[in-house]
Length: 194
Length: 138
Image (cartoon, rainbow over all chains, first blue to last red; front, top):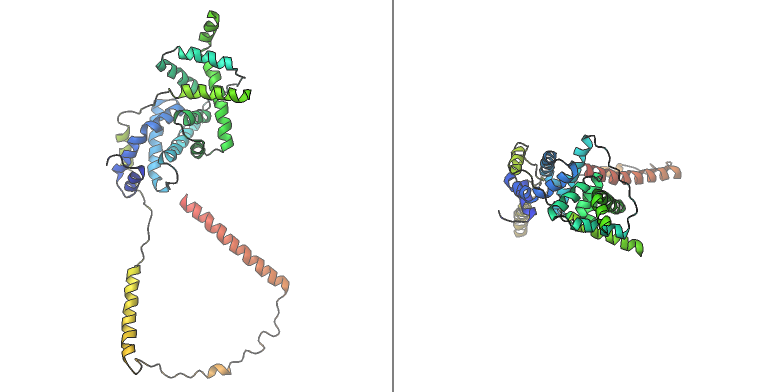
């Protein structure tokens, strides 16, 4: 059973071949786990959330109609399972004010970021992302990291198109603000050198 | 124009740096642990397909058999294959329904009410059918 389309594995699973489902797990576990980790912020919890998401996907596999991609359907389950896990914990809501950012502001932040090693830079951005509200964080990840279309994001999050666009716009501005605050000491020394 | 350029700059900034975030990988025994849990679950209920007791092919054979039994000997015989016993239906002429509905009348209000009621029943039937189908399909 090597590299068949998802529909084949789904059909086999529905006919009783549980092993066929493991191929789908192997294919999508990184995708589901990455989303879960970015949302719940803890690897241990993300493992649990990911397992729960796959178990739900298995239970409701017969309800997958095939009118969207299996990955989109699975993302929706993983997203909702992550949100449920977050709601169970008492998390304080992250509020970040959105200031007007100027073009110069962006370029100086970029200059500082580009001066850091790629791995360290990715860690900085990751930490900054964690400070966003979970729904805005998820939308940024879906749009920029997973490169889902707007239509797919709407399907995964069950939000309206207008709501997704507004949250995406806000999330980008907030992320920039958070990154700027994070690299502020470097920014000050950068302007100092100028 | 300036606002659009501003939005484009922020979009480009976000795209450049969010793409660099690494993909996370779960623990090595993630799949095996998950599959153990799945195997303990109830087997999946696949969609039930109803098969008729007599298939279309079966009905066709039955039809041919009837034709063979009834028509073929019927065509070959000059006299009828069987004959019905004689029955007297003259009692029907004695039944008189004249004037039964002469004095009855239905008001237009009743007629409109009955019509409106029928229309609402039909609408509700469609609505309820759709509602229960959605519940069943989830």
